[in-house]
Length: 304
Ligand SMILES: [Zn+2]
Image (cartoon, helix red, strand yellow):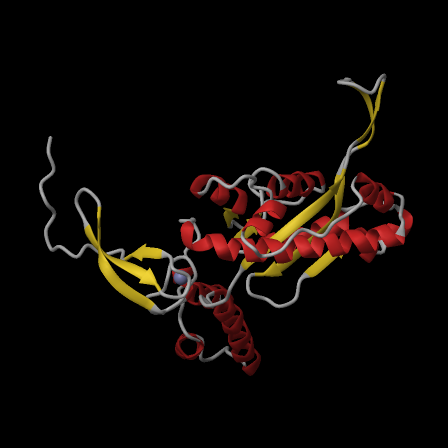
């Protein structure tokens, strides 16, 4: 009973001191010093959960192995049999703004010695990252990386990770610009940021599937650079995009919805049919936001 009450108070956002007061008042005769210690521990956990300033935006990219199949010919053929289905070879990631880029690949796991194509532990780690994230950033992530990851989660009988927002740099590029090409490599070049790491083509994937150590080194390097470039491209495009993830929510005071900066200027008004808002310009990223409150006391008439 005491434990249930404590859990409930934590969920209601009560402070550790308030919960201890409650426990002492209501369970005075039975409460022990161990109970007090566990209240403090539980309180810490909940405090971590509600830390609104923590950046939980994951920038990531996955590399998959192709399907290996039999065909009767080489041109526009039906597949007559699948030798081995696709799986995840590796993924690179960083939390937005983090210095280090992490790459996890199949040879990092014990299971690799027994089966070079077993991605269960790798997929488990990817699932944990998705589960920790409030938002995921990937290039073509909505159609490829996130769906591919989900397919492997389902294959390995993992439940859906906790909900997150999706930010797809390919969609941002297509919606707001007419670039000659929307590939990450071409975007990086056009925006003067950098290029993807060059590789020898399909041979690199073949080498990894065959267990070639040097091929794996090149794959990890290639994957790492993709995430490096992805973050840079995202940061360039971000003031243009209105995404579902509001960076302003990370700050306790008024902050840019695109980047979370507090360096803001009030510049004019934004209106829809019935409401007038203050228009806010971010002097850091250049993005535009608006306040959420109506600046008028009354609502105007609208035509019938
Ligand atoms: Zn901004």
